[in-house]
Length: 169
Ligand SMILES: [Zn+2]
Image (cartoon, rainbow, N blue to C red; front, side, top):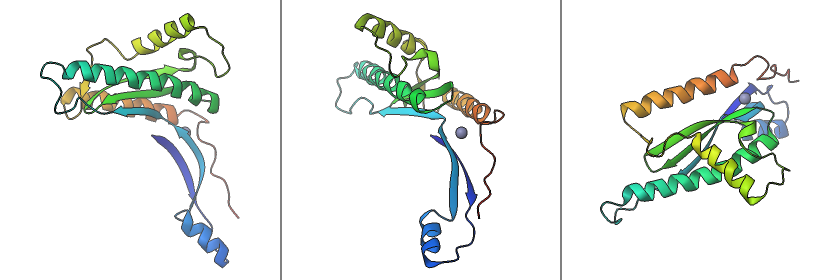
C-alpha cells in the first residue's frame, strides 16, 4: 500500500502535453512511499485433510514472513523511512508487525547462516504469538486494521514527511 501525494497538471497547451496529461489522469505524483508491505498467501485448500487447515495456514503465514523479511530489507535500502508495516496473510487469516530498520539486515550486510536465522526469528516474533491470527471480517480483525490505519496516518503525518507541493509551470 502506497502513500501518494499529487498535484493537478497545468492545462495542456499542445497536443503532446494533452497526451501526457491524459496519460497521467491530469495529475503529477510528487511523493510516493510504501506505508504497508503485504505478502498474501492462499488459505488451506478445500480438499485439505480435516484437522490440518491450521497447519497449512501456519506454514503459509510463515512463508509470507520469510518473504516480508527480504522485502523489508529491500524497502529500507530504497527508502529513508525508519519503519514500515508488514502484513502477512493466508486467505482470511493474517498477522502484522511494525518493522524498524534495525529489525532486518542492511542491504550490504554479510550475515552468516546463524546470524541470519536469529535475525529472522526476531523478525517473526514481532508478528506475535504463534496462534495469534486475525480473521478478516471479525470484530478483532477490524480493531487491528484500525490500528494499522492509525499507524499509517501517524507515519505520513510526521513533519516534513511529505514534500511541499511543487509549483508546475
Ligand atoms: Zn509518504
